[in-house]
View 1 (tube, one colour):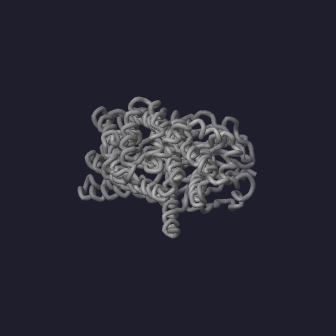
View 2 (view 1 turned 120 degrees about the vertical axis):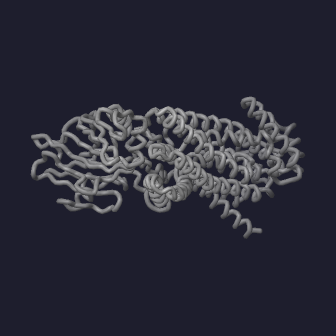
View 3 (view 1 turned 180 degrees about the vertical axis):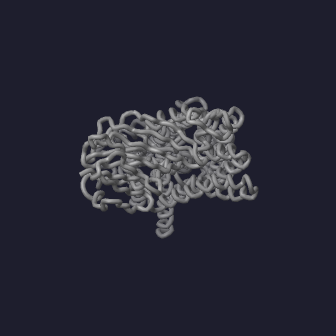
Length: 391
Length: 231
């Protein structure tokens, strides 16, 4: 038991580190927020990150020559597609807010790995499509200048960041409620049962003492529920009223979801994929994808304009979608990591009733906070994102 | 975020969660702190510039400004020229590209023209660019512009860096003779340090120029560093 738990713990920590490092590494602080000189980014080149940057640059630089070659020799298009695919994979492993938001969203919610994969692919497909639309309408149809297209990209960018922040607020609101609920029910439940150690602690913090009295009535109810149902059910059930406050949609989905939970969690340890595949769940997931998917990749725009100028727009479009496929594979891998890390955490804490639930709600709340932080950070320019090519 | 995790940690500690859980949360919070603290990689280049720069000296021996000639890569050159109307297809005159050059100057201002000058480790300010124009040569766009110093530099040593801190633009100095001192007193010398190979190409000076004094703090690995000495 101890060994297997230790293995699980290590796996979880590794996965969590990957996820967290991934997000933070790439969306690192762009500028010194204190207004001082920008720190020289000397520590960044080298190691895995340096290698990723190098590989990416290599593939990217080969694209223009390959497109030129394809003008004379059609078979070079295959090379172009191969390069684009590789670039997509490496590109997504590099900077980008997309996977941070998607992974955090998956962790914040009861999402399955399968849905994580689907959402990754939908968002990458959407990004490719938007890039093709911008260049198709802007450059091919209307023949506008690069700076006009760039203006459109900027508007989309701001819209995307605003949506991420709004989505983050919504997640924080719901998950914060669940977290507080879990903490309350945990204190409320544990105090009477607890050993003298905790009784002493409670005595030292009179604030805690109030809980059993304040929530005396409902507290009792939780107990009862708790003993039979899984931790989830208790928390969600107790926190039902908290969900009334957010906007109508939110409340609606949240509620539906919670009820399903309540009923099933009584006997199972977690929701089955089928339970999550309800229309509300998908809609929620797609809104996460939409926030990141509407912002196209600058690299794709450049490749498309270049291909158009060479009279090979179709090859550029194909390259963009293949690039998106590569991106999706990387993002999906990170998403799977995130979801499995959370799954492991859930399994590990399943035996611990109150504290396990509290931990799970804490992780979810943290992930929700991450989405909000990234949205606000991107909007204010503290978090570096891929710059729009406007010179 | 660090606060958030430590709050969770405190709550759990208070709640008497066992050691394993505490360790897990602790590790998580450490990894978050590390990842954020490291502040590692940002962007990756989408634009490549091959630069050649001149330092312009006045008759009195002071440095009045920096004149750049930046050659853009194939892909970006094509992108930038998208939608520019020309009399003759594929031939772009300086006049036809004048609005684009104007846009370039306005946009690059936000990034301090990727040109950073220091004297005794003190940042030197540039005035607005002058004499700017675009040239289309060998299927590449070349941006010419001059950045005059707000006050001409009279110091014995000037350190100049050309780079994009966010690494969206990759700058590399032209292979052959990238730097020229124009109208400089005969005693003035310069040294170049390129980012790619990490070696100092000491043309007249040795690399001690970089290791000693004010220039020693210059850390950006992909910065192109130029040091001018007029003893």
